[in-house]
Length: 637
Image (cartoon, rainbow, N blue to C red; front, top):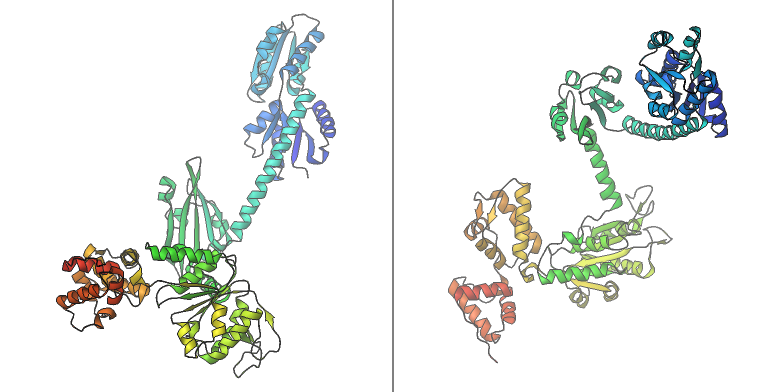
């Protein structure tokens, strides 16, 4: 049926409305009814249950429907000044008097500005206000004993006045008023339609949500109780709706949320055989708390989903998680290295990264991928030294069914195929055997792969980033690495500086790791300036990785809250000797070290950079030792 109802209190308005609805081309959107006053209220209540969006009505019937609390918007057909002027004009014609005495019985919504208009038109006006239907007979009785020339009002007023032998005139609405009301009703119906669609969408989201969802109002009364909530709490929604939450679900405390708008996120509760995680959030409109939403999930299900998603992302999608912002450091060396890597990321060419163990080669590889045009593709990483040589080839190139004993029936795609559209990272490329190197060389040249046991090629589009902690040129001279593959890989090259050559980065990284592990292990350790200086003097053969793990060890095992140089020495049993000094002498006393520094400066003509290199230490470390031993450096030319 139509979603807009036109309720006319008299036949004349019914026909008038029908004509205008037809003129507007809205016949399919309106249903017309003839009913007034109490019958109009009953009809409106029935239409409410039939999902009508808007009711159009007039006068006393409109007012009574509004006051009956029917939950459907009512658009009133107004009684305009033009309509009242027409009433007064007709009253003069009916009575034949130039200044008739007009008694008007009307509800308050029918007589706006009527007194001003009566003065303009020289009408003697008496207003008899109506509050309910039952007021009409008594008001007519009052009018009957006056010298009123004519009675004006609605249909019931006119019928009763005629029975008393009084002259009457029915108040009517003009076409303009009716047309305006009909168009307004159409706008409201459209708004209600949009509102219903949104409500249905919300209902669908709630009903099919994997979370249990309960909605309550300001009085803690349950208004929404979705199927997942029924299942998890083993309660029936019909029994829960309309109940106060604190009387039926005593384990949920909503007082702080409803009173102060306080959120409660991540509560974990044990209910029977399951654990649930619970979130309580206030519903706030115009800074007023109107209720709350309680959402909860089965913890076991969350754990299962987390495991499944993690397997999907790490095992199938091969996501790169690091970006250039994750590479920490303030030294000019690392800043320049990051700048070069960022430039390389914009060029879709093979990259060869060299650097000592622990300098962050994979961190750079992932960052390059995440800044490249392939960032939405897979990032596949494989450590060439972690797999036996007989497995490396099958992992990289894949195999077909029956390729070798133990091969799966359906075969398996190789990592090159899985990296299609993205990046493959070959770490420790120097450990690949000569046959694997020749296969890789062909991939670089032809951009296609052949699975083990297959006779056809599969085209692949991927970027290769290789990394090594060995001198590939030395391996080429020894015959362990193919020269042609080296030059294929050596398109874009970068060498990561070791930590000992990165000025101020040791202190910067140590401070960062200390804050991180303090938070992880709920500690509050602090390292003194002398402690940081002592860390900076070490040559860190394991680079950033070694520093990170040492700081974690320190946070875990240290009893002291303030970490000085002496405290660090106490817990650093595996500190290695610096190779530059141990090559010169095995005596580690301060005087021997002082002599070594003086000797090195003399051999290098007091050149700090050359002297530090010969001693195997950083320039900043050498400067500190010069200050400690009060050695004055004099340039020789």
